[in-house]
Amino acid sequence: MGCSQSATIGIQSESEIFPGSTHTSQETIPNRNKRVEKLPALERVSLNNVREHHQRFSLCSPTPGESHQTRIQLQNFDELNHFEYTFINVLLLGESGVGKSTFINAIVNYLKFDTIEQACSGQPIVLMPVSFLLTVGDNFEERIIRFGNEDPNEDHHHPGQSVTQHCRSYVFTIGTRTKIRLIDTPGMGDTRGSDQDNLNMQHILSFINNLSHLNAICILLKPNESRLNVVFRSYFSQLTDFLGENIRNNIIFCFTNTRGTFFTPGNTAPLLKEILGKFSIKNIPFKKSNTFCFDSESFRYLIAIQNGINFDDYQKEEYKESWINSVNESNRFLGYICGALKTYPSDEWKSINHAQFQINQMIRPILETIRNLFRNLILYEEKSSTQLIKLCPSVVAHSSTICIKCNRVPKDYNEFWIYPDDLHTFSNKCLNCRCSRNRHIDINYKLDYELSNNVNKQFIDEIKLKSDQLNQAIFEFGCFFVDTSRTLKTNDLILSFLNQMIEEENQICQLKTNNNLNLILYKQLNQFKEEYEQRQNVSISNKNSINLNKIYILSQNISRIDLIEKQIDVIKQYHRTYMNEQEKQLL
Ligand SMILES: [Zn+2]
Ligand SMILES: [Zn+2]
Image (cartoon, protein in one colour):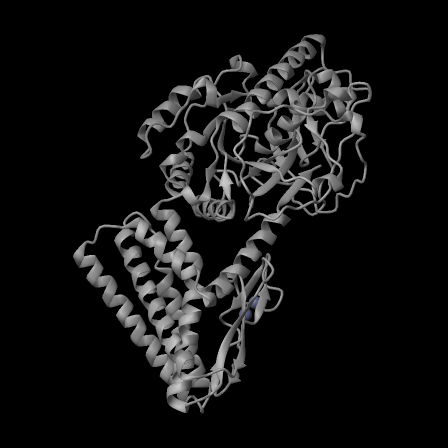
């Protein structure tokens, strides 16, 4: 490359490109290249919710002769199966444009290469492809610098717009027993507006809700900000509202481009202090010990060199030193998240928002079970039937929806008409119909129905008991919703699902002439809804105080009822599969 101009690293924009799942490098790392990093003793956490994904990708070659410096432990695939790893889960949050993707790539390379010379002669690790604009030479010509193979399906015409719309996680191994999972999140302050920001936040919450624990929430910032985004405050407070106030000690701050501020937070520090002082959760620490200052530009310098850009001696010296500073900060970061920080297990996340989130996940399982118990009681009472209807939940793919506009054909189960779950796959548009997005309801499991024959008096009594227990739970959850809805500006999801079920029965009754049983069900569901609303009204006028513990105990008890548990199990499977798809492992 004959580019003799020296470069000014003036990064104007960055687009982040995600690799497909086809990285299949089979290169193995010789044993002599492994070095065991001694880390402080860790509290062991069993990873019970996230099944590990042993996908190989992007194995890096160690630098010949310098491989003993490798501090990221590289494992043979087979070895993975013999160890139980402690996972350190780190959630990364930052405004759009703060350079999260570059940060993730950079930190892995700082942990691998002690000096920039080693990085230059070695092969930098690509956790995800990144491209950015660089202005070069006296006339500030723009050059696009690329790192890693781009995915041809991605849109690169809007650099700067946050491409990360889903959470993704990147896992690498430290030492022999520890894996770091960096969770990348959609950027705050999305150019598509605050609705998108709220959607992003819901997505982040539903992602971390599947983790067994969190170790750190890492807030990425630039030094010398003139103001901190409003969205930043809203994101941050939503997250702390969800995780409960004990999360405060697991919050850390990482500054990405601090070479210009001599590796300090610069003017962002007073702004941040001011905002932290106004949060509902007090005493969030912001100290040297939980603050880390990197220089992502030294990583970009490395990539620029690999793209054939030349730099003058002054710049070379500058980035050489900056790399070493970043390496030191990365080691301190690692020591802190693996050592000083106490794990925050999910069973300690307690808050109104968190409880509501758990309830929301159970709404469909509970209400579908209630509807089916109603059906069975009607069958027994009206027909003295010996055949009952059984719910059979099954796992679905992530983009599964049901179209509420398309005609569905009800199926007959012992003279009960039931709409089957006709699945439509929705990505950018529906692959099965032409209806719009808002006509499609996301579902996280599918219900089928079967007839079973084991009816006796005792069985019917059990059904009545369960039905009563579930009805009471729904009333409690409904009251919890109205008692707390001043802080939760969301719709009553129980009521809207109830309305949807009632509407389905209404449609069926109009569609079918032999509709006796469905008509009774329709009436019973309406009565149920009336009672639900009455209970809510009583709760509002009583101004009941909120008993969060009672709600947690109730939702736990309900989730252990076999009919509900089966449905929740397939929902969990659905989430696990999704999280595995979003995870890249550096082996
Ligand atoms: Zn449709
Ligand atoms: Zn459709």
